[in-house]
Length: 510
Ligand SMILES: [Zn+2]
Image 1: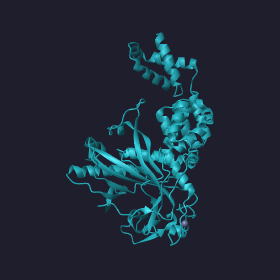
Image 2: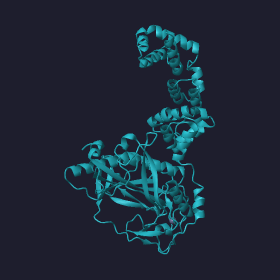
Image 3: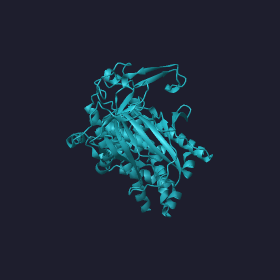
Image 4: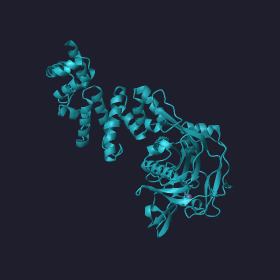
């Protein structure tokens, strides 16, 4: 089997994610007052607590507890009032006190979910999904828990391939990251395709950016994702043996790593082989996963409550005070764009699904509700197309909200056509000019003068007797050809809506 669609004819993939997010918005680490910055010069931000010196006592960072409660509220979790910190014991140089402080069976946030808009094609791989009234598909992705923990230090394997220990000459340890506040979100095995996994991760990232708990940089590693995946025959209830995937540090790697692994497992099963429970490393450069370690039994971390940290008893007042910081979330924003501006669900979801795009949209819109549709169109097509091609973000480009707003005004008032809007946009980028100036200087205004359009249309009718006859014989589609001819005759400057309307009027007079 070579492709996902081949695999999905026979098998169903069951995918779960574990997503670690560093709370980069906080000033200090989780249990000490060291600066919370893992990118400073090595071993600058350390103290006896985060280095784990004997006798040093941890003091929890209250703002970190607020952040995780906020994350839980934003992802529909139940906030557990009574949870506590545990010690996860292990020996590794990245954590010099030989245990990591994390949470036990009860985490601050439990039993959440996110609703995922699943593209129609991906939805066909699901047996448990119904079509919504508006034709879209929504998958309900469970969140098992979000717990609080501290990050470990960073090992730099010198001479190793891809930052891994294999082939390394020696390793250096940087403890700046040791003790950095970290939240881990674990999903239920509710995802079915690599596409859904990518969409879930994107949606979660936008939510965390919106509630401002982290910069969520997958490149810098402040947001990291592991996945586990297994296959089962379509219709089967029991889960197959799962493998865990590491190193999926971008949306593309997450998607491609899972895709590779699903196809690999399918081929093992097809050949009568057995999938082993193991941890595998995604190698983007070789486009494959390789075994990191085989797990025969669960690791024994001897998890027990940390005697240095008292159990929590969060009050309703505390949880309510955090709730007040909950901003408008992407789904609520999408619904508002549909209700207030009449945007299509697709446009509204796309805009609201990106904090950067929606902030730009709202800045450019101001109180000019009437330009909302044209504006959404320009941002999602012209601007996004340009930014994608150049690999830029909005803030990195020199396009201002004022100029995009002006372009949307020209388009929504029919002064220019969408074809002309595209041309004006291209000139805006090249020459850094305002849209109105470009339109004036180049005489690009759309011809909306009824008299001129009637003349144009009459000429086209006179030149196209065959097509006119076809129209009169009931072929409505031929009008497209005639509009095209009239647009051509106007050198692309005719108002297509007006041309269409005038053509029908003139034809009906014949
Ligand atoms: Zn410290």
